[in-house]
Length: 241
Picture 1 (cartoon, rainbow, N blue to C red):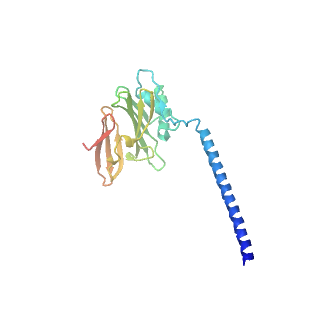
Picture 2: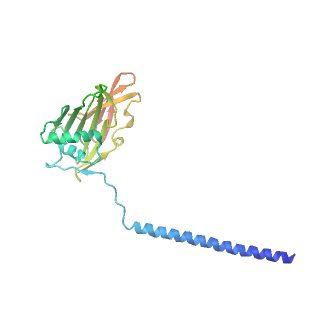
Picture 3: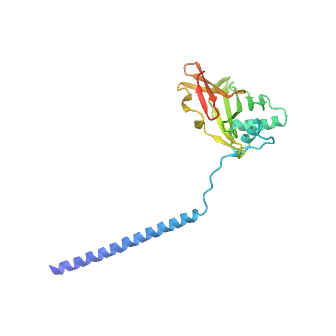
């Protein structure tokens, strides 16, 4: 009986020693890998990551920028979308006093900080005709050094509004201290609940004077409802009258 037990005990002891050595080896490898990664991260961390800056400069000749300066800054961006891209070439022609293509026109009111671009495209083969307009309006903020530049695009199909890819409001916030402007989220300025649930299309109209945006809500019933976004210097208050 003793002759049988001794080899078994010996084998189990050797196996235990080998298993222990393997676990230590694995632990040492994992520790070494962890230390290597930590060292690499430390080396990478010697140079702090640069914060992404999505703002862009607003160049102006007068003491403060006007509506033309703001529009120039917005249209100077690399990715402005098809709608503003179509307007950009005609804007350059307008500023240089060239004759615009048929169906294009601009209205600029520097005093009120307002601009509107109207476009009427030739009829499609099936008779469908697209048109629309783009507006910009500069609104004063409670902080006198800042301005809110509001952009509005309205798209029409055979004279009736529809919500296309570029339709609706876009906001830019200008900082006079840095003389730069950046995109401002609508959720920071307007309560999302302002749009009626049963509205098919909401058409906005920027004020040429004043600070209230008119919203015509085309309902599923065929009726229309009016809402008003009243600028208070920080955000828009919503009312139905």
